Image (tube, rainbow, N blue to C red; front, side):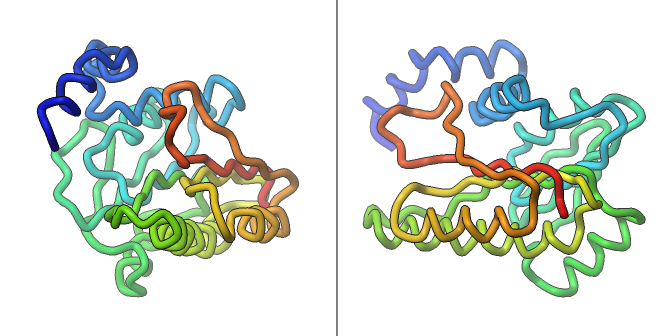
Length: 199
C-alpha cells in the first residue's frame, strides 16, 4: 500500500471511529450500521462468523448477543484471541472443518455472517466472480447450519451474477435484499446481501 493510501485511511472518519471504539477493523463499523438498520442480532443468539480474521465483525457480534449468546469464528488466517469468541482455524469450505463447526455449534445457528473477500486481482469481472463464489459457499453453509427463521449476512460485489445470487438467496429465506452501509466507500462495488427468515 502506498503512502497516499495510508494517509487517506488515517483521515477516514470510519477508520478513526473503529480505532476509538477499539475495534480490530474498519469493517466493524459497517456491521454495526447494518445491525442498527435491520436488527440482525438479538441477545442470546448463536452467531457464526465466516472468514472472521482479524475479528472486527466478531467483536460487534459479541457485543450484540450479550453474555447469554455465543460467537463462533472460523478463518484460515491467524486470529488473536477475543474474550467470549470461540475460534476454529481452517477453511470453512473444507468438509472436515464444517464437521468440526457443526460439532461446536451443538444446535442450529441464529445468524451467520461473512465479510469474506477474495484476494483482489484488479480485474473487476474476475473479482466479482470470486466474491460470488465465496458468497455461494456461505449461502450453502447457511442453508444447512441456520435454524428456521435464522438470518444470513454476506458480502458480494455488484456485477454480473449478483442478481442471480440474490434470487437464489430469496428462495431459502422470507426476505432478502442488498444493502450498502454508510461506512462502505462510495466508489466500492461492495454490497451486503442480508436474508432473514430462513425457510
